[in-house]
Length: 198
Image (cartoon, rainbow, N blue to C red; front, side, top):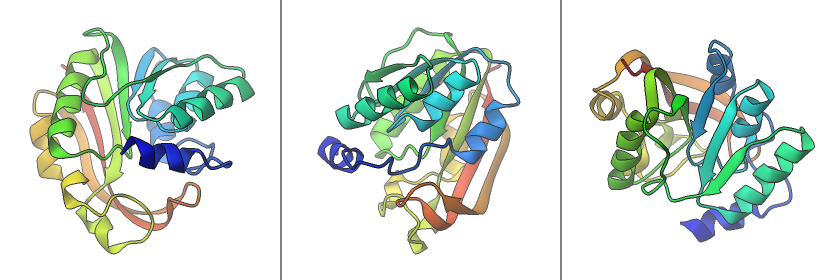
């Protein structure tokens, strides 16, 4: 899996664009800046956006090529981000250290997903928010991106169970038009969630 992402992120252009995910940017704008953790942040587009909005950014990804581009993007926009090379199931941050965690197009096999989501709940401070946008199973019929393995796609049932210890403020399937670089382009079926740690 790491070689797949290293190959993809080794392309010259930013394969998902330099702009942040639209839903992430909208929801982040509603929050008072603090510390945010961004798992599996690829080439750093969301991390750099958060830093430009005044957030203390902790991000990670498995891909060395992704980190190189993320660090370069931060330099371009003259912001500081902490971008680590970490495995999603093994990433370590202090408990109750994050005001927000954003899960943006993070698709993982069930055991790794469960471990990451469990850890995310631990990382959040009371009152901390989860912002999520990922593909759902209806995406399998589209050609606008995402894994073709249903085990790596989120449903309301999965998210309701994995985040049952949080207050789920919003959880909906949405059909959108994606325009995020050449690998996220066209009609897409996604699921969006906002949840709060009580």
